[in-house]
Length: 82
Image 1 (cartoon, rainbow, N blue to C red):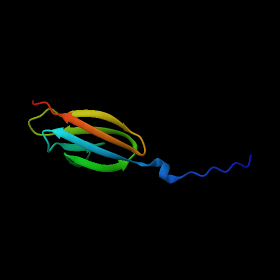
Image 2: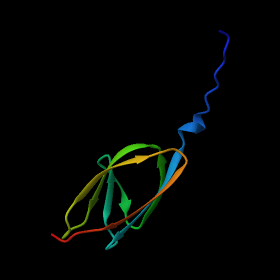
Image 3: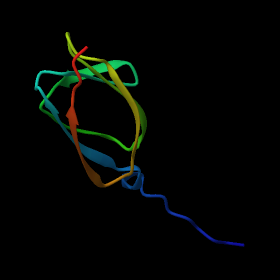
Image 4: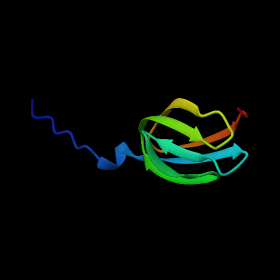
């Protein structure tokens, strides 16, 4: 029908992710890849991620997070002792 659709690659976008834990120094894994220790501030592509929080002496936490493009997300997590 002659329609031209221009797709802007920027629409995929990134997400600002800020993770704070109590205590700090918790290792963060996104889709089984280590990304750093808390407190953690990073920018990642939008998408659905499996997040793991790991610290010796504490229960490992697992959750699924859905990050939309051009969003800012804050997570505050209180770790539970084993």
